[in-house]
Length: 453
Image (cartoon, rainbow, N blue to C red; front, top):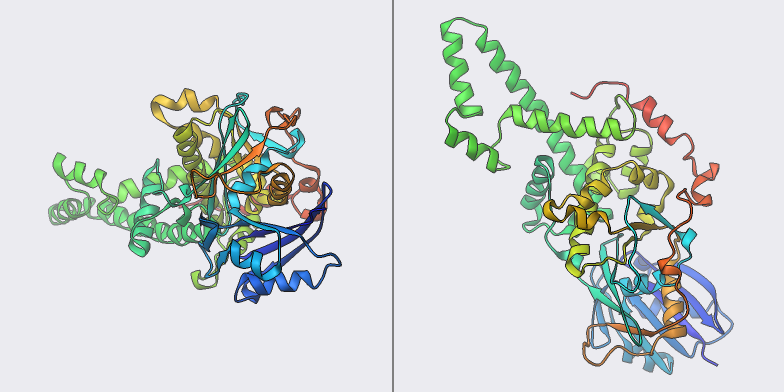
């Protein structure tokens, strides 16, 4: 009898479980920081269980090549043959962590996914699974005659798309820090912190622009000397010729104060309208002390910069998801996964955000994307659903033609992936009063009392 040791390895946590005779048990989570390598983590888990595994399957956050992986956001190198030899396993299989997430989607029940926006999934068509965490993972699923094939992807490291002036400014600011700005720099836990830092700078830039506009108006009210000074400042700040105006419009670094103020007001007004609120206080923390969970906590209290950060975060997520959907024409649907998104307060922000509008905002392909559904997976154990699915239905090795971690599983009678949720509502655990979410929107409404300037 096979007893599988299952491992889901991210940049922050490593989770273990046992799978035998169709049952998953002994799930345990450990912090990666506590171990210099995967071996210490495996040893620690094995000491807590009463049976010894015969085989192992690992989902790892990194690019898998020839059954070896260097984690993207951690210095661990994991080699299947070394683990198999050290622990005397019959087999050890390493696949990309988002391949596991993708395979987990195949076992979802209709009530375990929440549809956001319009669209209807097409049977037997490609599917995209993506989600922010420590990094930004992407996986594609395609169906062949023999079964489903899960394709790993490094789509999270493509360059980030933008659709507005302020999004361009955020990317330009982060470009000074990182050089090339990948999607993962914005759509991840650290990405949320990066956006928050950029939004803080943008607000200061807006305040400075507002002061410049006031200064120009004060010059304009004075006599001929004042008017001459006004014209000089206007030439310096805004430009007067068509060439100068076009140059200012085309560059995120050369902008008129009026343009900065206008675009900032447009986005802050959109946030106020989306959350049905008037104003917001600012309780921001110093950048050096910030973690993703701090920004979430600030957003729950109605902090202005935190709410704006999440607004841009979901805009970027929608734009990126649409790029991935067009890449493989995933008319089977786009699935959003990850613990960040299913936190009750974040889930409510997502539902009221511009995510779906950003997803559909693709010019000539807007109508095409309008027909592709987007789902939020509400299960927090999706990786183990995928690991269990692979243990039960997989072929125990990667396809010979790729050596890149592509995994094929046998066809089953499970067609739940094509079932649309009968009723769109928050899952029961997200409505629980212990989550402190029932009054979340009320808190935000109460907090947003002071006009944004």
